[in-house]
Amino acid sequence: MLVPLTDASARTCGGKAGALGDLLRAGLPVPDGWAVPLDVYRSAVRDASSASETRRNGPAAIADRPVPADVRAALADAVATLGGAPVVVRSSASDEDAHDGAAAGLYTSTLAVRGVDAVVASVRACWVSLHADPAVAYRAARRRDADPAMGVVVQRHVDADVSGVMFTPARPDGPTRIDASWGLGPSVVEGAVNPDAYTVGADGSVDAVTAEKRTRLDRRGDRLVTRVVPAPDRHRRVLDDTDARRLADLGRVVGAALGGAQDVEWAIADGQVWILQARPVTADLPPATPPSPTVRPAAGATVLTGAPGSRGTATGPARVVRDPGDFVHVRRGDVLVCPWTDPGWTPLLRVVGGVVTETGGVLSHAAIVARELGIPAVLGVPDATLLLGDASLVTVDGSAGTVTRAVG
Image 1 (tube, one colour):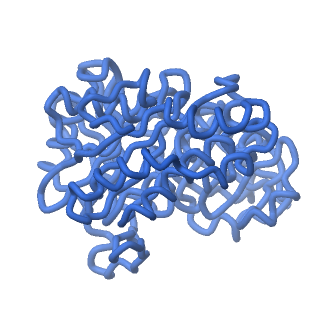
Image 2: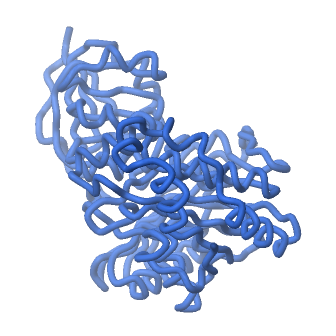
């Protein structure tokens, strides 16, 4: 019922598990674990309800389906081999982490999972997320597989001191881009913090931009807790030059093993670097050094700056969204202005003309999806929801990293 990650392939276990299996077979530092194959989902869910019923009823058609007894027994054995240590349960869908679309952040992953009951519930949550509204909207926008399946990765949890995302270069002479912050990775990948940003050249040169990292995410028992970062550490670099080069060197090995530029989630715990997942880079990043804005603002206009997240420009009414209750106010062509984006907000990205967030980096899930959909985005704009009034006319320049509010 389970496949050791060392034996996993994308064909049998989904994109994420397949990539991790390739990396383990290449001798790279990936936490050990298992994959629940695609066929287990097909047997447990699709055979119990027709594919048309699953598409029609979405998560409701799956949520109450029991995980088969033999799968539960296999998961109990796997958890026992770790001596009760916590695990991470990650999605590994058949249409996830592909060259033509990453589906970044759309499916469920759960950290700090302890005990077989919690692992089983997390596996079911992955299955359910395959047919949740954000995933369905993403597949429709990308014209992706209309009848996908869900594999699942169950992997040893890493209590990270530092973590982040790395984009490896497409060419041997290209730079490596790294976003990093304190604690566990969701702070960076979900855009909940403004991370430090590093560019490591092929010659080993390191350019670092240090951000104010106000919070960090850590495990406490079987819970995740958000803590305030002590003031002296907020503006302190997360990585020194040696760490940045070490990550970049490892990233180039990952890219060689997987056959192209990769979006890599990594963690450092007790000095050990771990590769947590890797997917193909699906859209080009904006330049590390932003160009000047393409349009000179009118006298009296308000110009805000942030991290260039997705190329292009868009002009439209600002629509401030702080929670799902604000979704009903969003109209086609609006510029989405929000504290950060949750994967559940992905359907909005099919409607809006541009995206502005108060926190987050160029390698976050929101930026990845925006680039795939061709929507300009500027991230990490302080107090954007306050300074860009709802319905005010704004222009987003996702290459230059500027947001301009028109006069009046």
